[in-house]
Image (cartoon, rainbow, N blue to C red):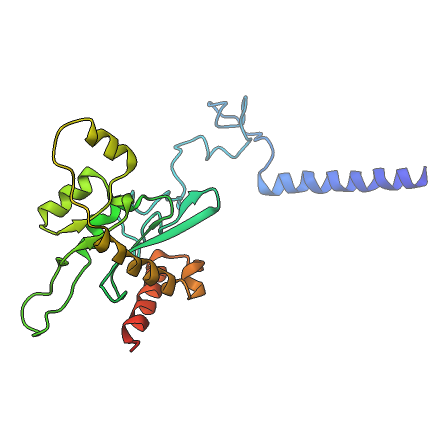
Length: 241
């Protein structure tokens, strides 16, 4: 009982402090007469604190959802939204599409998410090819002598792009494409197995790039940094005797 009385005594002291605080800080009901009951703490009011109801306006420190709505641009480098990361069964994946010369030296590199199909990146890879001329004069070459690709590029749009650029190509047809072509009359596509056997050069180029752990397993957050690592590894391959 003694402990309970001590607790009741402290609660009484706390109530006295709260009453004095309400008197000094104007937190209690306003005793002055007022014509507007809502402003003076009527039903649902806050006593003398009528500023929230009388002439409401936004706070001086207003939260901005995005910089685009305010008309200002963000400072720094504008990074892409995807960053070359794709979702697959293994988690976040990335891949790089490249073109190489006959000696297995990279000429063009494009970074995409892992689920992006190879045929969709044929034009970006071709546009990235820049080979200086032996004389050093004139514009660099952008059209290879011949393109050798696997069945992943055996689509009508890929062949149409190569014909428009006047690039000879050797691409095998898939089984379903051969069946559809055999059902209708027409000349079959030319395919040279001896030329296609040289496609192993690009596979060996990719294997040489994957000898670097940072390329086989991506550690960079930004796609630009990851592509820079691929470019550095490509330069090392070019400098090898």
